[in-house]
Image 1 (cartoon, rainbow, N blue to C red):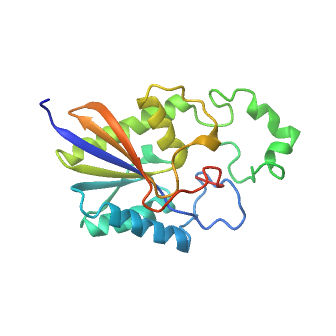
Image 2: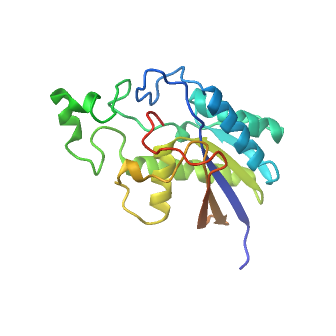
Length: 211
């Protein structure tokens, strides 16, 4: 087949310093932990021999810190893309773990009426559309090379399900998007062809607080 092939790597940020165990979402000031910085370096090593021509990141601190070793390795500045940001969530700042979190409180139950949208946060379809737009921006910037986009678990997983033609609602416990994982999208010109998934830092629990 003829046409230009471009690969866009969507990287989930590394582990975050979160001693309170809250869902931090878009709250400012959440940085990588020591383990998260190690994971970011592993991702940079994994991408060291790739033809990376542009590095984009969510505006959240943890995403920029994960992108930094990749950008330094390939001698690029980081391009901030607002569309890569974490999903909106009305439980931001709360503990949401099973048994001791905000979900036990009746005052929060009205937020849970429609898990298919979902009613407690940003609509899945909106997330998919903005993430796909970010993918195409990175694809354009990379030309015939490769791009790196550092984002968050739910946006990356939503984009993947959208491209695979699957329902966007899902069980969060079954997301295949570990910390510092790489979900790579292959485009032929402007058309998505296939994806592959790798875990340079190893597998982590999809239920870990925050994203």
